[in-house]
Amino acid sequence: ENSPMMFKLLVFCCILAFHCSLIMGQSTTIGAQHINKHLLKLLTCPKGDFPNNQLTSTSLSSYLENLLNLHTCPNEEKSYDVFNDLLDIKRQSYSFYGFLKKILHWSTRKKDLFTLKCEYSSIHHNKKLSETINKLFIFLSKVEMILKEGKSNGSSKLNTVIIGAGPIGLLNAFEVYSHTKSSIDIIEKRSFYSRHTWFDIYPQPYSFGYTFLKKLGFFDMNIQYEPQELYGKQVITIRCCILENFLMMMLKILSLHNSRIHIYRPYELISIEPSTITIQSKSKGLLSLKYNTLIGSDGYNSKVRSLLRFQYLPQSTFSLNSKFDITVNPLFQQVILASFRSIDGHCPTIRIDEHSNEKIDPFTTGILVDKVTNVFKRFYHGHCHLQILLENEIGSSIQESLWDVLFNVSKVILKDPPASLTTLKDWIIEDELSILNISIHESFPLGKQFTNGSCIFIHGDAALNAHFRLGVGVNNGFIAMEQKELSGYINGYYNFDKKINIQRKRLDALLNYQLSTMFFESYCHFQVFSKGHLYSQSLHEYVNNVFVPIGDDIDTIYSKCPYFIER
Image (tube, rainbow, N blue to C red):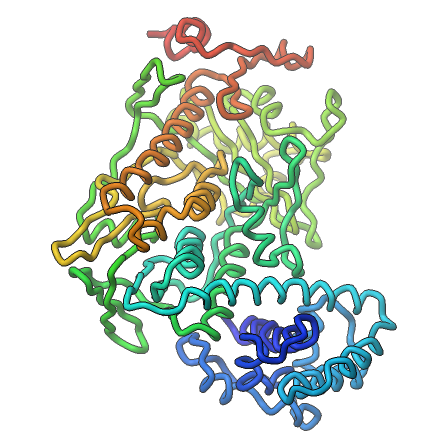
């Protein structure tokens, strides 16, 4: 949300114009025809920020100098550096940047494409440069496909307002854009994204997240993520703020071409009426927006849910194989969140497990450290986060034993652990150290329909919060998008009640999975490796490299779970 970031976005759009002409072979595509009118002034000097962070042709014109006058621009070097960072390349010769300017003019004036391709080949002397630019072209070709996908839907009098531009709200916007004719208003109160929670984005059949991001060209850009593997399939681990910035960037690119998308940021929701909401920003004051469908995807502390006076109740009952109901009230899990300081951008080295000859895993740590069930390490790209999940019986004593737990965990997971508590306290970032009691809350109801036909739905954490240990929140959002849960209602394929029933059924399965996993790990000392697979834990079994399935019948669970034995 600052000038360099905006400038990167504009460079995307600039080269999109080039791409549409050069690769697609069409100078009249959406990107080439529309972008070049307003973005021929690219690779130039920033002159200030966009008014209210809105990308319009007017603000672009005032923001950018003419591309042809690039060499007279006092901040020319800075402009080149931004472009180089985007492509992850070193500083190039002036002739290279001059050629990019020439490309833009060719695509605008519909010059001979064959001549353009031949001249483009002249910059292929640099292998890395060639690879990075071609990679960018692949990304932009996918942007073009998304643009066409939305344009084919035409326009309508329907308007969908989305409150909250976190991952779920942004995914809702993509679904509405791609599968309906509704216009879209996105309301976000934050000026920038700062949430550093790590998400594991799963492939099919666990989620459609990996497929969707690939479709958007996520993997064709120089974006920071960590590749993983699950049962032989690709998984990526990414910080929430990076995912949010990427999705928002894509929507801003789409909004340049399609008047259906409007982004209001930073604006805060003030009131909700049938068919109308009121939002407010410090600089612009109050603004009223009309809606047919309103989506509350504004998180755990949802303003939409609060204004509607919906209940948000803690849940404590889950079903075991649809045969037995187990109620534990209250049902929660304590978690320590901590971060090590990085040194020169590097996290402390993780210890290698002598049994598996791999980095020690979360479950092994839980077996070896008393009162701990799992320890999830997010040591990526200089961000050294720990999620330490605790057994329920530790209770309020965690406040007194916090540093002892951290010290014992560090001795197990680190190759070179701190020698003392004093040293450990120097390694830990105190401002990022916290203890949470995680419980699962669900909204009742999930929506509201007014007599005039307008309606409201609650989505994401506003409807059912997700335990970050399980990686189910954002992945469930990808599933809902793929199943066209929202767009099916907007398009009239089913009515309000059926939409609510579809959503409730999906959330009930998610709720049951979360509660059962939390219970077995936190109250029973079991390990849950994957959905439906429970294992008893003991040091003896670990030493012999054996994890014994406990079965899923209630008698076995009663006989092995301390929670039931003590009762």
